[in-house]
Length: 425
Image 1 (cartoon, helix red, strand yellow):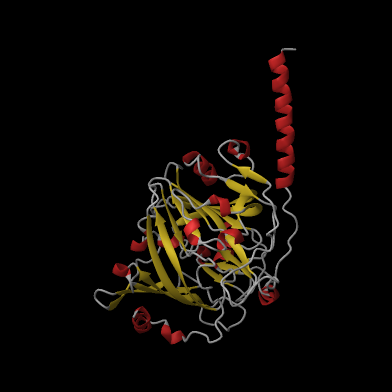
Image 2 (tube, rainbow, N blue to C red):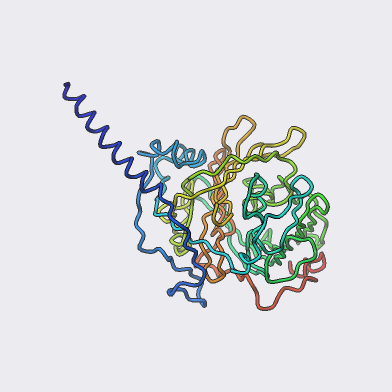
């Protein structure tokens, strides 16, 4: 036998064995072990969420040298595009899967049967405060589970946002928000509303106090979104019916649309929705290390510092949204990956009319175990055309914790055009 051929056969066999062992490790996502109360290291007076899995070691680093081995196995098209666009810097550190997500017991107590979709999926009728579709069977069930996942009750918080340019320069901003969430098990809701939200930009100064009030119903067909905007230049509040769909707020600098906030929100009527099945994919998960790192160390050119992100093999329900022929939206095609355990959207990919990828979006989650609930620590959107990325809704130990359930509920009278003017000032 040819000597070089013999060495090739040995190398090929060894590589195959190693890959098989890696895939055996990756394939085990384990059983659910929800963390429903704070861990011992947690300090309720601080801003940190200590890592329950601090001793976990990296199983595998996926990088430019080996990512092709995983293209057909556990990577999404957006992740592949990240490797191909940024081969020298992009990587994914893969850890053991830890299915720790939990919700308050009161949510589970209310969750028995599926809710009912009405008006072609634009509305929903169900037990308020439950997981609306514990037995999902169609695409919009997963979308509604994400939209109505438990996210607190009376909420207050502030956070920075960033646009990072390819040369490493950063445009910084900050905002503040209050919200009243009606889909929860702790308050009575007979208003047919999802919730009410007021936000304002506090930095940069030219946008300071540019504010928004949104009232969202449980049926966008019968009662469309109501929105008002406050302009600090004129000191006037006006109706803002365009704050929906593909409207792009100035602070987003053209990178994301209004209906991409929190993954996806608002009316669903411009798309045809299809369920692509449950898949095992590597997702940004249990991102405590990122949360606990100083923000100055996390922003690098092209993408966030991947040294501090954790990826786990996760069962995700994959949903595709395809623009209807008679509708308009600047995003023709969207693919969304919803966590089967927590119902959070973990990744979204957008595509043009020719199915060429436009952007890759990540929503790394942690279990806020003092609540308990799993939500993202930021939204990262990577725009391949401009080679910029946007980081919004940032949660970090550098930032005061979001208050998810205030001891004194918000006065509903605050959420009016006049209340918006007072909030803005």
